[in-house]
Image (cartoon, rainbow, N blue to C red; front, side, top):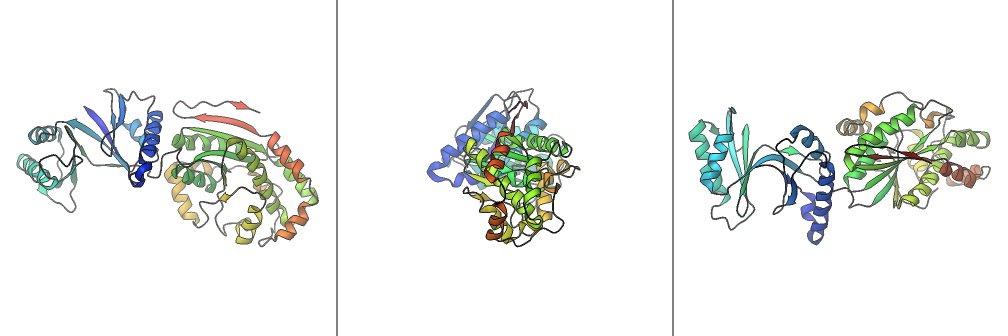
Length: 394
């Protein structure tokens, strides 16, 4: 029988709460593989076994597992007898045309009652493979590692491990509301919160019809990619162009960007309450642009009572780009668009705003009215994976 053996790492440190974390991971695995004909998924002495159907597509399954948070590593494995002679026979029969320069056996006993120790399992199986194939044993840097895991009444063996995304299963960290532009940074910030077990709802501010709808289309594409990691996503699209126009009429030019950001947070806070989200999340990185100095970030954050998390605050651009390429958002993010942040932007924005100056500037604005307009005009799209579907409502 062919299986996939899934190992978790951080979950194993959760003590009495571990069963709940494992159950969330099992649920997410069932959702991720719901259209792949997987026969069964269950826990098995500190690991998870996913039993494959004969017509299962391993390449598709491997991609799904690589985007399921909570998995440290996984391997396509053979489920067989724990009797050492039978186990050795199966391994030899399954080596096929492999011809490495060196090999090693890496054995683990999940059940310590098994009468043969792990080192002895490695020695006996290694001797059989060496006798049959003549390969050199190298315990330090083998070209091929044959992994063996012995449980109570059966065993698994597999050749190599696939890296999982790590982190914690989606659903264990609560809900967050993420402000997501069409750029490189904010989708990475969303992904990093997902990786800590948070379910992220996305809020995108666009300036259509003042500019093209390219930014909104990019947000939809980014939402589709990110949904592969959390399986269902709600994207709020907030029309912000008219709000920006009204800010331009009344606010001092150098403070416009700060006021835009404060209004965005206030609108996002209202939408977050609808979703039951506990915090807001942004893609800000310290010093990257004028609005992201310590002074400006502080003044912007004071506009709301809800905590604002900034997962990228100490990351540089190259680190963020590497993450974006890794998670599949980079190629979308670099497509040209008309971002609302560029609309009506001042040529010389303030870099060290003070709370008093911003408060004074906002006194000339109908802030409550602008927030209501943004919330009322927001549209919502639902994304699901697998079998992505979307529906729009207002």
